[in-house]
Image (cartoon, rainbow, N blue to C red):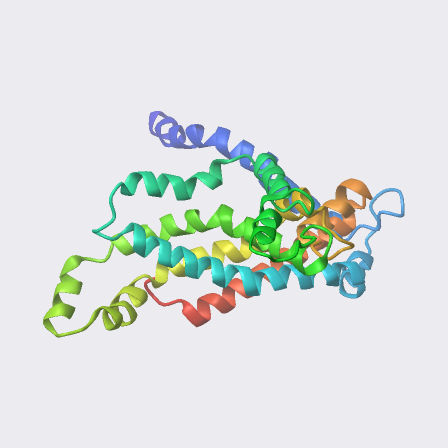
Amino acid sequence: MLRLRQNLVPYGFLLPYLLIFLLFWAYPLVRSLFDSFDDSRILGFSFSTTNWTRLLSDPFFMTALKNTLLIMVIQVPIMLMMSLTLAIALNSQMLKLKGFYRFAFFAPLVVGTTAYSAIFRLIFNTQYGAVNQGLNSIGLPSVDWLNQATPAMIVIMLAMTWRWMGYNAIIMLAGLQSIGNEVYEAAAIDGANKWTTFWKITLPLMRPSILFTLVLSVFGTLQLYTEPALITAGGPGNATMTIGTYLYQQGFRSFNFGYASAIAYGVAILGAVVSWIQLKLLGSDNT
């Protein structure tokens, strides 16, 4: 009996977490799956595949998907390359005040999303924004950043890059610092120059951290909501509407929770497929 009580002690410590996990994670996950197969036009649960068939033929969802994939294809690679460059710069022996610069580039992540979105709206304001004033000072015309499709998308990508570049750089910096100096010393003895050392040693050994930031960035883009919702409100028209903003519209404005659940699971499936492809292309046994 005493041994049984001792064996139950670890489960007692885990019980609060397991209850919270079941209540706030497992239950919503299962419930949303049921909702995705529920015809919300009929009172009570009524099994239907309407939400899923609508997902494949909904022009608004396709627009949101196209915008999301466009951001993923353009913004994510550019941001990760800038993060890698920044990580290398932060790791340089010639750089002074490293702690200050690391905090400065990580700081955007802790800024409130509402505050930084409002600042971006002010900076890119057509009439009195700092960006247009800068363009005018060098003789270039103003750009209607927030009311034209392509400029609005550029603003979204710039905001995302500003917010997440430092975060990814810190992760890559950790990977960079895990490479032992003896590897570089051996390369120097073999006569490798800096460019060869970067391509043949630094980049391959940083592959786990680069892959990690890539997967995080892809999932973050698939769930993107804050910037399009607070900076451009998904507009002009639906030019910057993403899957996240469309899911919010369906769930919390149209109260079509069944269709919103189908969208959420569609995003999860898409994210799993993209991540699987990334792991197959860039992954290895040690990742």
